[in-house]
Image (cartoon, rainbow, N blue to C red):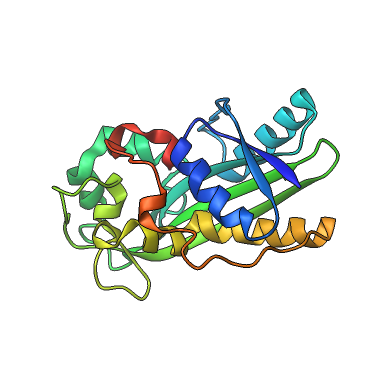
Length: 216
């Protein structure tokens, strides 16, 4: 089965291809920019874009949108992590939690599939907490990785190898569940799993994370 992934980010494509290949699903890149609709929840953004592109191009598509959430502030910054980091910086973000006992946070990935007739939405989460200070400012990672500590870990994501982060990420969880659903729906033959399918050297270099908003 072939599914088109709507994104302009080659790194995302590589990551998703490695996951979906294990389930007998071929991913091709549909090099288009989704409508961000940042005033809407990520779930709605993913679904509306998937249905739009599936109808327009008459092919099965997958669209993903990602948000970051402070538990103490409900849906903030939600679907606007890059914008809020740009406006507030680390100083402003950490100030919000200065007197908060609840430092819980999560990354959330909304993955929507549509073939023009049926739509499926799956949510993947990576839960954890916000650190007391900013770590690894000299490490080339996405901004929130310097302040987010995933459950079961003692250090922020910034210090974990990229391959390990890919395996545990909100995106990986959502796409694996989507692959399972597609596999059952279409009775696909699941390929033998490749243990090193997410090895770090398999991925193209991706630098200047602060500017790469499509990765969130």
